[in-house]
Length: 97
Image 1 (cartoon, rainbow, N blue to C red):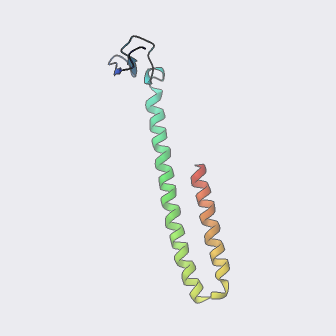
Image 2 (cartoon, rainbow, N blue to C red):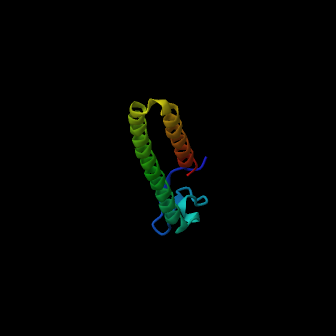
Image 3 (cartoon, rainbow, N blue to C red):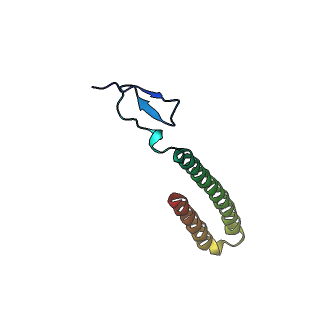
């Protein structure tokens, strides 16, 4: 079985095998790896920001729902439905992001 230890090759952007086998890892992607990593990081940061904003909004809607239930209890089912639908749509958008 060939040696599976790997080392970083200073003359390339990726990993190469100590056993002299085919190189693998980042070298096959070249400069695109850094770009792909940055885009993935940006994507996840955007998802986190979207989730943060959705949670803030759902929290505000829940507080408003509680207040409106005290002021006008006859609309309680409507307030709950509105808050639940928004939370559901926001969760779906975050999941699909």
